[in-house]
Image (cartoon, rainbow, N blue to C red):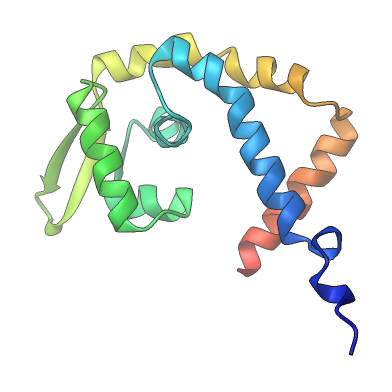
Length: 141
């Protein structure tokens, strides 16, 4: 019986996991400057696109369950970046909306993607290919 399949270097999951951790680590100093964690930052990115979203939409977009997204939104609210309110049309749904402070934080965050791009040694073509492959995996799991 061969245990070759159990070697760490033969696992697709490990480089994905390790790269994810390292990329998030690269974000940390830039996000510290604006007072956000990485998860808060990606939630704010969704809200900067739309100004508001339901908790369910946020969870779906970020691939996070309600046990993770609810405390995240509460923390953003305590920081004065978002508001939460029940949807008048559907009491079961909670709408998360940017505050003025949350909207203005976008101006401080706008340079972060470029800064991160300079930290990762990929050409534009390589980054595009990686992006496509990662989203292909995300759509199937």
